[in-house]
Length: 211
Length: 181
Ligand SMILES: [Zn+2]
Ligand SMILES: [Zn+2]
Image 1: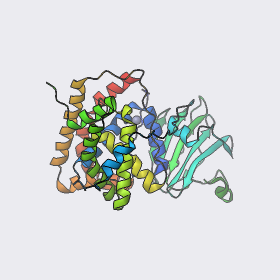
Image 2 (image 1 turned 90 degrees about the vertical axis):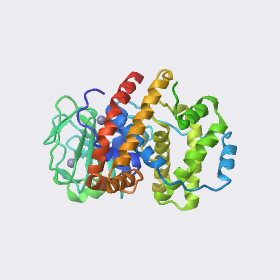
Image 3 (image 1 turned 120 degrees about the vertical axis):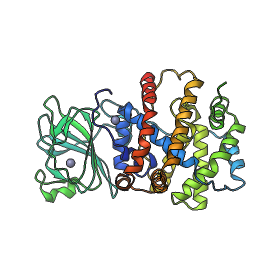
Image 4 (image 1 turned 30 degrees about the vertical axis):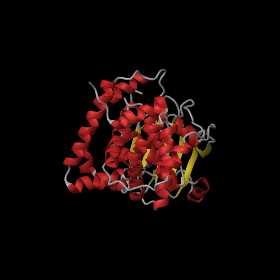
């Protein structure tokens, strides 16, 4: 995609490459890389740096029979792992998180919807659907928030974000994203703690919606 | 004449001829390094050997996905190993980007493969020239010993120093990827 202006930064790419990035963010990174040649190339470069570090490690001897055992296993048929392809606006990794099915949207009120893809102690990742021209509910997060646009656009204090763009925000960023007028904005958003919407949904209901 | 690295030659023999002797050589080189990496990542010795076994099997089974124009062998092995290690330790699979689809596999161009290898050698010497504490930070970052917030806080400088080197390799990679579409 040629029009992407907001990319994943090198610290996040290095963390993803090394496996240190929690899965909710990893999903946003892998979805963006699926859409962005530039970040795919940069991720390749980080893997190269990782490979160079690995090459230089003092080797530790493996047990004597491991090689023979492996050589015998080579003729066994490999297990087929299902792969997921892009479907409509959803890149492969998102389709995998959806287990190949269309998203099951839950209404949050005022036309806004969400579909939680995963939720755990490492954080949560969800799809958000914001009607054209409408604001994302006022929210706060304790840490890093990554938001990738899959359809439409939004803009906030950080700039304008179109399809493929990622907004990287942390707790110090107060932002009120507003969906563009052209169509509903659908994005993939990951946070390391449950999102807290301050006014949109009564606090009582938040545990039910898991937001 | 153009002489590709041994690792690349072994990997191409595995991919194109399903050469088990080349696989044995690749194992002799990477097996002990993969084990060292797994142990640095917190694996017990027996767990580490399981990881070595699975990574080496993936290398054999996914060899058709190896493209020396886009990834040098160690980078490709590293990526498979990190995926495996995340699966083992986190009990969840790491989300992976869609594979690039190419209509036809690109024709092998030894000159280009060699150019990528040279780029990697320059990256390696850039790593060696880092100050010891920066070098340690880079090692920790790529061995998964730093969390993502520690990477942003502590290794910013070190990452910045190798970044210029990393960037040089990008333009060609990006160019080739667009040709693959
Ligand atoms: Zn990008
Ligand atoms: Zn936010």
